[in-house]
Amino acid sequence: MEEVVVLLVAALLGVWLVWNLWNLIRLPVGLRDGAWHRPLWWARLWSVSLFVGFAAWLRGALSGGLDVGETCAYAHHQTYDGAYRAAHPEGFDELFPLSNKCNAHYDLVPAWVNPTIANCAAFVLLATAVLLWFGIARPARLIGERPRPRLDHSVPTPTPAPRMSHRTGPRAG
Image 1 (cartoon, helix red, strand yellow):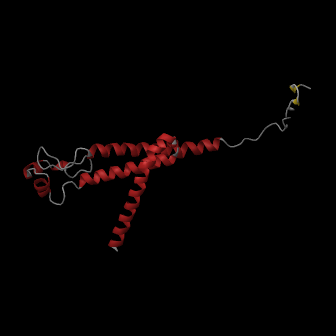
Image 2 (tube, rainbow, N blue to C red; image 1 turned 180 degrees about the vertical axis):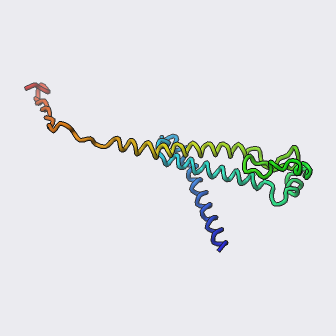
Image 3 (cartoon, one colour; image 1 turned 90 degrees about the vertical axis):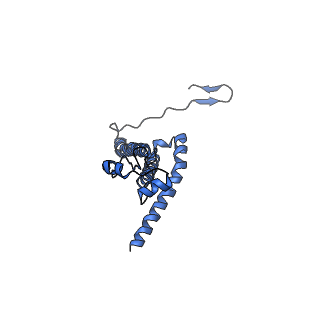
């Protein structure tokens, strides 16, 4: 049963990845064409921002590997300082900002990860606010645009078109 769940989650993440790759093409085109006035453009921005933010967070959270000491020594050629990690345990288990230090001077989490997560979170919040605005303002505007019944029951009379003469053009009377 667990294998089915893992395969289902992997398939959903794969579909989400393909959707976001398509969205990366459509977002700049939508900016050029003025599609940012429509909710779908903002939903695409929301999806891409959430995906990129999650991928950046995952990259930072898994930066230490299974054994931080071996990752520091063999992958990054840094000395592992267990005393430093024992003296500063507060920063290594937080969800944000991510940090996984080998010693006082070297962090395994790349420098671009935390700013990327923060920017993606800002874009997600912006897109959410705009989508909520679309969800509230558009129906309210549509409700306000209902055709109103005419109070006077008179029928407007059309004005007669001017008669045309083949020699002189339009003439009165």
